[in-house]
Each structure stands twice: as C-alpha cells, then as structure tokens.
Amino acid sequence: MNRAAQASHLLELADVEAALAALRLDAPPGLAPATLREIGLADGYSTIASPIGDLIVAWNGLGVSWIELAANREGFVERHRRAVGRPLDQAALPARLERLVARRLGGDRRADVPVDLRTRSEFEREVLRKALEIPRGQVRPYGWVAAEIGRPRAVRAVGTALAHNPVPLLVPCHRVVRSDGMLGQYSLGGPRRKRQILALEGLDPDRMEAMARAGVRYIGSDTTRIYCLPTCHHARRVTDRHRVPLRSTAEGRAIGYRACKVCRPDSGTAVAA
Amino acid sequence: MNIVPHPTTTADTQLARALARDLDGTFERLVLAHQDRLYTIAVRLLGDPRDAEEVAQDAFVRAYRAIAGYPPERVRTLALRGWLAAIVVNLARNRYRRRPAAAMELAVEPVEADRAAIPHEAATLTESHRAWAALLASLPDRYRVPVVLRHVDGLSFAEMAAALGRPEGTLKAQVHRGLGLLRTAYLRTQSAPEELSA
Image 1 (spheres, chains in turn brown, blue):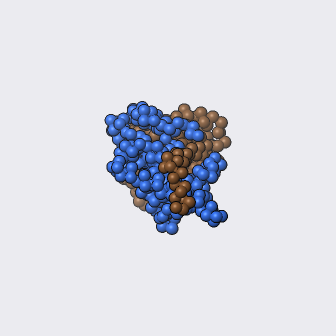
Image 2: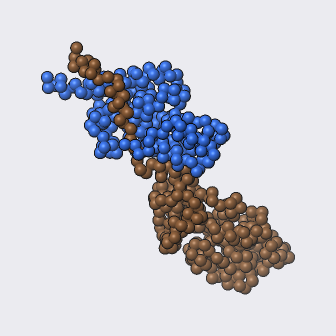
Image 3: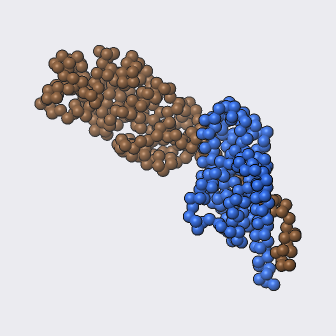
C-alpha cells in the first residue's frame, strides 16, 4: 500500500467537504454598485470635456441621464436627486459611452448616444425626441415643435419640457427658439450660453435676431418658389439675389410659393399667427 | 467572513414576495443578499476573478430582466437561491466554452498552488485554501458544477435538481465522484514531496 492510499484513510470525504465550504468569498466592493448602475437603478457620474467647457455627466446602463456644466457643480447631487431620484456615486463612463458622447458633442450626428429619459413624462419625451431631429446649426420655433408632435396648442408646455431637458447638448434643446425668431431662454447657463453653442454650430445668432427684429420669419427663393424657415439648410443656400424675405407663410402662399418639405415651415403657424 | 449572512430560504421567500410587489425598490436587497454566493460560484467555476465579477454582474442583470417580464404570481414563488445559481452556472459555462481549448482543464492533475491564485483571496486565505481552490478548478465540468453548488455554495440536492433540471440521484453520484477525485488529487499533492525525500 503506497503512502497516498494509506493517507486516504486519514482524509475523510467530510474533510474535503469542510475544505470546500471554506472556499466562499466576499464579492468585491464594486460589484453591487456596478450591477445597480448597469440595470439602471443607480447612476454614476463623472466629468468630461466639451467644446463649451467641462460637463458633469450622470449615466447608467440605459444611457446618459443628466448633464450639467461642471463650472456650476455646486448643488449637483441635490439637483440630480430631486429630478432623477436614483442613488448616485462617482464612476467613470463606460469607454464606449464616453466615445459616443465625445463624438456627438463634436458634431457627429451618427453617434447615437443612448439617453435615459425615464424620469420624463411621455409628452416630455416626445418633445425631446422631436428636438433631436433638428439638424446642427439650425433652429426651430417652440410652436413648430408643438405642431410637429400633434399638440399645436401646447407651445408653453413644450417650452417647459425643453427647460427640463435632463441631457442638454445631447438632446439639442438649444436649437429651439421663440416663435418671434429671438433666441429665448436656455437651461444650461442662460441665453448667452445658447448663443455661444449655436455660434459653435455655425449659426450667426446676431444676424438671425436682426432678421427677426425686422419681422422676417421665412425665406423664399424666386427660383424654386419654395419658402423655408430662415435657418433651414435649403434657405441658407439661396443666394442674396434670389432671396425673398417673408413675414408669414400666408405671404409666401399669396405669391404662389409652397412650403419646404424638409423644414416644414407651416408647422405651428396656425397658433403663432 | 461573509458580512451578509448566507440567505436562507425563508428570507428568500420574503424577498420573492417583495420583488413581485416592487421590483425596482427591492432589487438592491436581492443583490446584497446574493452577491457573495454568486461571485463565489463564478470564481470557483471560472478561476478568474475578473471574469467572475463580470459573470456575477451579468447574472443579476439577467435576473432583473427576467423578473421584469414574469407575472407577479411567478415571481412570488421563485426559488431564488437555486434560480440565481443556475443563471450563473449557464453564463460561466458559456464563457469557458468560448475560451481556447488550451485554457481548459481536461484531466485531474496535481496543479501548482498558484494556478488559481486570486489577488482578492491571496491576502486572506491560507496555503491550504489555495491548494483546494486549484484542485477544484481542475475538476472536469460535470463534477465541478455540482460539487461547487453543493459544497461551496451549500445548496441542497433538491434545490440543485430543480435549478439544473437533473435528477437528484445523478447529482448525488456526480458530487460523490467529484469529492473522491478531489481527495485523491489532494493526497497526491501532499505525498509527492515526501516520496521525493524518502
């Protein structure tokens, strides 16, 4: 009988069982918080750079849930708690999400950044989804958003929904302006910030407001006989010689022009008029 | 050493009822009650602590989504201990099946003690723990899974049978055979140096 065989009489299976029972481990401290974030029952937050300065970005497994300017970070935790209500701790964005956010903030429309809008009502989500359709460097009036989502009389509610946009810049509420063509308010740091962001996107806010003050709401082209909102891609291609400034869509129709099918300038005119 | 005591069946019954009522408000309790055991099962099946942490997290995420899709009466009667263990086992299996063949243990060989050295446990566990962990890691899958569930995690054969969908008799035989293989392998590691010196 060799030594191993002899020893096997000394090592009972019960001893093996006891040795196995001692192999229990404690989960690493990060497991529970990471799990709850992944499911979307808690948020992480960290700071990332953007063209308008550092941002605090809160996120979870469903997407980005909250954005603020890092410069105004005082009270951030409390504002997040009141608006979002989920537990919050500091945690870097997952690499993939961070890359998407950076691309989007840099102007890449194809960067499809997931956002978590569960704290918003269905109406608010609809408003925010509609704002997402406005191309970079262009603006649409509040009344346009209201009409486009089939609630033409809810202009004021649209304004409130945009003011409560939890993810500014990603959902470009800065591209929605007053129906008289003036820029209007902005939640992420006031009107001056709105002007700065739109200028970074290639819009000339001074020129736009000057036109609005002069009563111009639409731009027609005497070659295509189409009228557009002033910042529509198609309006901006019309050369000065062929630009026809219009005060209303009715004025455009009266001279036989039709509405642009891209910017849909008739949306919201019923209430605005 | 576990800060949160091993969840009992009674505590789980209450937890399942609470989950049926309010999933989002209760799920953190489930994570805290079961994270040590799901992590342990994953470490003992995979050997690698980073993989294990990912698998344990993924298991909870899947559990959450599954519960969200179940009718409340089904959630109320979930046998959480076995159900969660089965999710980890499946995810761990998928993961080590994806690994290159060279990384898989095919035979019960004496293994170097540092094979399963885990930074997390290195500080707290003795040489003997590491030796047993390494032996367990080298056990073939069909024995390792039942041995880990029965003797590391502490599930009953009835719970295992329900969770894995295998007859109790089969599981008992596999556990018995697994324990025997472990004992032989352990004795071989103990006797080898003595034989050299003899």
